[in-house]
Image 1 (cartoon, rainbow, N blue to C red):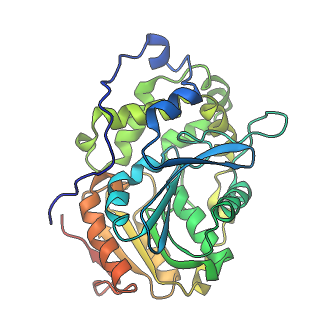
Image 2: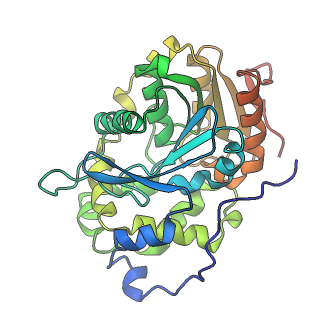
Amino acid sequence: MASIESATPASTEPLRPRSLAARLGITSVPRTELQRRYTQSGSRFVKIMGADVHYVDEGSGDTIVMIHGFASSLHTWNRVADELKREHRVIRLDLPPFGVTGPLRSNSGEIETMNLPTYRRFIDTFMQALGISRATLIGNSLGGLISWDYAVRHREAVEKLILIDSAGFPMKLPIYIGLFNSALVRVSSPWWLPEVIIKSAVRNVYGDPRKIDAVTLRRYVEFFHGEGTRTAIGKMVPTLDFKDVDTDVLKTLKIPSLVLWGAKDRWIPPAHAAEFASRIPGAKSVMYPGLGHIPMEEAPERVMTDLRAFLGTNGATASGADGVRYAPV
């Protein structure tokens, strides 16, 4: 199919050299600066749990809510959202403590720990604040876990469920996340975390790192270096233990569901795709050869083929004898 043309305005501002202190992560990027650089034409803010939550609301029709993964932002959906908003109302948000939103803070100003119970309160409040009574959820990685957990808790509020390289099953944390289980890293990272480490982590989530452009890399770096984000991540990572997550409850879901996965995902094992598909009744699964952990960002045109089919035919997609369809390269 033809390549997707992004309707999201790309910044024409040239990439300015970062100071040595910025490159080493000695300084942080102020929230006001992140807002100036990374809000879009459809950007809005809503006060949730004391934070100004950044989201984009575009298009009209049936509502789709997109939820990104760990250390990502709503920008990961840019090219897919540009297509879907032609026929749907598409809402995507920056989860705390990431993107423009940044950390949640208590009344005393202390950074909140973003564990699953906190994310439950957050996403429930966000949906209520925007008056979303029913929607299709599309979640990637951590956003996938938040999405299917929401579907389990609010069955009548979810029309369809799409999981892209979703978290939920027990796994060893990727090395770039697991670093924050070290007390030394948690203490030092707010004051020193070289951008070379962040760039290496971003390249690691792509099946083909050559596809990452300089603007995308800079965005990931500046969000990770955003004011308060590293402290929040240090508090969050020790809570990321999926051994106690009840995935058997997925067997009770009666929602049209689609599981998409990059076969070269180095962060969450591709075998987890079959685990999700086997538990969710009637779920279909598509495996993308050559793609990594964020296929919708790495190859949006390939993902859009399956999204269009699923959203347009009430979940009827072709699959192989093993229940998994292997998408062409």
